[in-house]
Image (cartoon, rainbow over the protein chains, first blue to last red):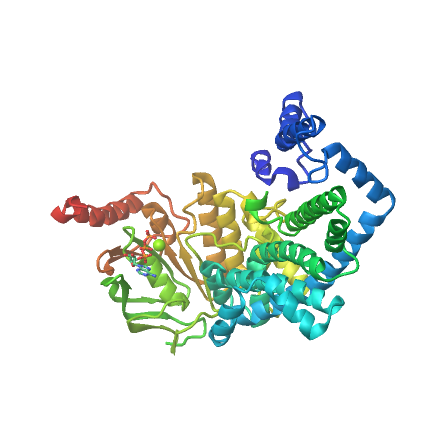
Length: 279
Length: 261
Ligand SMILES: Nc1ncnc2c1ncn2[C@@H]1O[C@H](COP(=O)(O)OP(=O)(O)OP(=O)(O)O)[C@@H](O)[C@H]1O
Ligand SMILES: [Mg+2]
């Protein structure tokens, strides 16, 4: 009986050894990793062929091989990495600020229904404003250096974190709240052992969306006013009509965004091991 | 009725109405029952007759429309640690391991060493040694329910309310758990109120079996079980009592409107 029951523990039980990679399983795994690559590869080959035949003008859309060569150059010279790091550092600062405030505000609003009513009108008006609309305003207020860009990012990541924290807290299973009531748990226990863990998946969702938006808004802010960063790299390349550099910049934004999302998901899966939906 | 051993649980003419859409559902009507300190009461009744509602009012999770519940002299209005509850569903905290879920039943002031020992003891009691690090989603329904039982037993309440606690268990585990509950009841003299669908279980465990009928939920009969423990499920007297209780249900079925459902 004990052995049958251990089956339920799956991979987390120390007793269950990892399954050896049989040929069938390996093939299936390989297939699931390769599948997302098929369509991009086909497109790239097509694009390359069209470029070689001279059907696409290289000053507008360089061939993938040319873009690849430029990318290698920019990486080797450290230029691309430098701009990416500048942007990432801005995102880090902005997200810390925005997500931090979002978390605190979300807790206050989520735990006090009156607080939600009190701020409902303000949030209702502020929330739909696109981040890019803030950029000129913030430049007027704070100048064109770091402050305005970081504030833009902070605003961008604030809302999704706020909304998801409130949502997570509100959606705490009433049945589990009743259990806490029956066992007469203190307010602190209720908050830290019940409400926050219950809201954690939602908080993570908010963080993921927030960081995604932050990454998009930093590039937006840099396009308008900056002397470093990926956005600046793209703008500057446009002035010099370097389509290949521009495209390297654009693609690197996407790749970095994907990498960030991947890392957050990894962290999420680690911290939310209890969540059957993630397994 | 405050004696030295404990307090009676007095359920005094409870009424409970729910409003569903624009309708009013009479879940309980004029339900009265007195559980002596240390008494074991089983409640049986058709699905939807208000058993869970009754337990929830006693637990202090629901307020009655009329009437009241008292423990000793004190009216019950809120949950309290002197009343424990095993819910119909396991209701474990999904982010806590089995160990932490059981420890959740502990009083806040219990020192750590004692807490560890208690959890250890209760893990063993419900047969889940070796699973302390598992999360609820890694357990079967019956295992989850056993964790929930262990959690409720942790702080040894005066009154333990059990809402179909063994529903999800297999026959063997069920009998073991019944015996464990009896053992705990005998050593701790807890007042037990057990809701069950299993008439045998009701008779095996209870000093009295309360038969409820539905719409509105009322107490139809209270059948005493004057048999010494441990009880033999196939003894003549046991079977007689079972027949008596079955008869109550049968009457229900033979009423014409019951066919209409
Ligand atoms: N929160 C609620 N809102 C509205 N109606 C409710 C609520 N809780 C219970 N009821 C109604 O009260 C009646 C009794 O429900 P209850 O859960 O007490 O039944 P039960 O005897 O425990 O049934 P079961 O054996 O299926 O668990 C049902 O008709 C149900 O629809
Ligand atoms: Mg019920």
